[in-house]
Image (cartoon, rainbow, N blue to C red; front, top):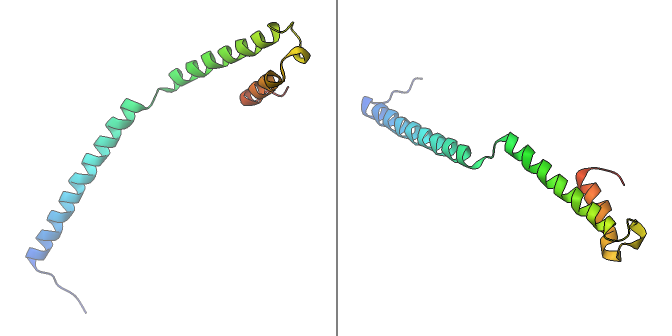
Length: 93
């Protein structure tokens, strides 16, 4: 058994699909523009990670040097600083 539709119904369906296609193309363009404006290039991220890692290393080193260069002389709250920093970097103390 075959089903037939009228030309008017087919034209309405085609028009609805064309409108949906135009809407999807506009959404794709909006998302493309959004991502190119908001995503930081990989090189910039790597440079930022390197700068922050060096700053964290300097902070941990300063904490040790400020207290006679020995971990045992660090105040109790600071004793967590270096192991936590190394753990955040993926380094085992």
